[in-house]
Length: 385
Ligand SMILES: Cc1cc2nc3c(=O)[nH]c(=O)nc-3n(C[C@H](O)[C@H](O)[C@H](O)COP(=O)(O)OP(=O)(O)OC[C@H]3O[C@@H](n4cnc5c(N)ncnc54)[C@H](O)[C@@H]3O)c2cc1C
Image (cartoon, rainbow, N blue to C red; front, side, top):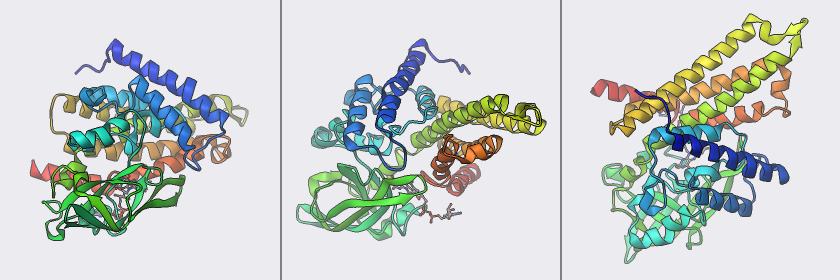
């Protein structure tokens, strides 16, 4: 197995690093932005469009819709690079949940023109509306109903915790067309415009990591034109799952980047902070934490690139993607905690980015399938083998 990257990929990584450090971070600094709330919409759009120009936005999408269709291993390297920076525009780099995802490859020609292509250019944003108050891990138990009436579908229900929901121009909404069938023909995906009568996206929610990044979507007798159905009636759940393995690798890649940043800060601090007349890096208990952090990161990195390599060989990585997401999410939380410990009281202060990163990464163990659900997926696949 060859772990080296091509010159072209390394150049892309360098271009990305420059884009973040020379364009995004100065803009963040200039406008004094932090993660307490999403940046102003016009600045986000400016950064999205610039990212699209550089080819990063929607990078994993096929070339015929404007993406680069890059191998999973290369994508991991770029997501890792993005994670290394304290960047409030992180969602504008590749798109994330608000940008283009393979779910939208089910668009017909008309839908492609109206939704997918403007999304690829960064002109509009979307959101992925699956979770509901009564259906999170048990996602096929959604209660939002879609009933066909003439040439319209009438949606009734409520989604919550939807990333980019408060800002999205349209939502991918998963609704039940037949409760009894659940994942097997009972869930359909609709493209719902923000201004559709009966749709209300203006319900920002308050989180540990700031306000307004996620929100509720409410549908009350919301009339969605039949032409806004994505793919086939009843095929929504398999569409939703299309993204799952890539999304799980991406979370680990971001986690590895963040963890490397935490390790670097901790090494710098251990060299420079003195106690009992010597640098704290000379204490073996501090050294043990640094060694554990580096080992954890190395393990996550290796698992991730191995799984990405397997995917690039055309192998089914459902089990491995769950392992990578589980380990990456748990790893970054351990590493941030150790970084805070090494920094002592300074780590708890807002003068360092550590307390913010701790709040940022806690959700990695929860969204895109909780750590418990990843373990269930791994065990289910093991027992099937
Ligand atoms: C910041 C944030 C952003 C999000 N973005 C989106 C988004 O863009 N789109 C979207 O659709 N959703 C989104 N979500 C929702 C997310 O996917 C769910 O929160 C997640 O799937 C967990 O569901 P839940 O919160 O209902 O927890 P629950 O499913 O109620 O789980 C509660 C606890 O029970 C455990 N549990 C549940 N079932 C089992 C089981 N069978 N065995 C063992 N333990 C179990 C869970 O692991 C957890 O510990 C987001 C959530 C957050 C917090």
